[in-house]
Each structure stands twice: as structure tokens, then as C-alpha cells.
Length: 157
Image (cartoon, rainbow, N blue to C red; front, side, top):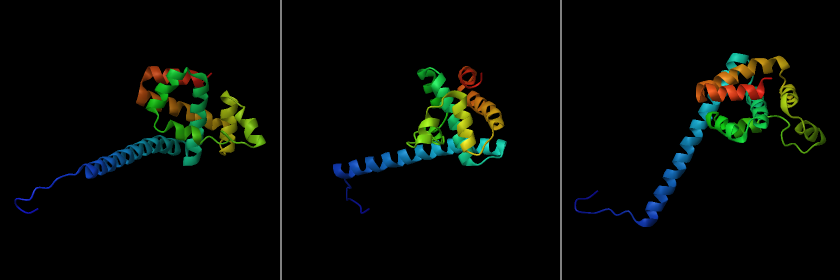
């Protein structure tokens, strides 16, 4: 910059700068959520020896069962401590399919839906017994004992 020359930020430049900062903020928040979700998925893959797809779909099916049984506000609290809950729920195989098989499996609820989803992921029922306590512990670490207790009651008979 030359001495004696003033630089002005014009309104149109200011709006462009604000927009760019907003995009950077959204991108950084997205990266943080992905990193946190990958922490959960990474823990499941490491502890259980399963793939990322299996971890995401399995966790999503268990969280979906909680969504069906927990009061809406409690599930909202659970969603607040589990990063990218909608992504995990979306990873459940057969959810929202339009085929005849999809309609039949979409009508399943509770544990039968979890068993069906695990089967489609190439997982056994015994994997449900392994994954559920891992998720309960994760929720307790992130959201406290009260929330993990509600979650556990909703997914464990």
C-alpha cells in the first residue's frame, strides 16, 4: 500500500466477504461433524472388526429403534450428542425403499427392524449385542448418565 492512499471497503465487497466467511464457517462445521461421526464409526469398526458401512447402518438401526420408542424431546437430546444422527439413520438399509421388499421391511419396527437391517449389512444378531453397549457407553460419555439410561431403556428390553 502506498503512503497516503486510503483503502475503502465498498458495500458490495463487504457482502461478498461476509458470504465467503459464512461458507468457510459452514464448511468447518461440516468437517467437525464428519470427524466426530467418524470417531463413533471408527470406534465401532475397531471394537467390532466390521466395515464403516456396517457400523453406520448398524448404529443407525439401533438409533432408529430408540427414535421409535423414546419421547420426541428425549430423542432430540440424543440427537444433539450423536453427530450426524440423520446420516446414521439414512445409512440403515431398506429405510424408505419403494420396492415391495422395501415396503415390507419398512413396516418392521423395534428389534425385528434392527435384526433385518443387521442381516442386510451382513451382520449377525450377536453383533447387535456387541454394538448396543458400545453405543450406550458412547452416549454416556457425550451426554451423561441420565441420557444414556433413557437410551438404554429404549433399545434393551
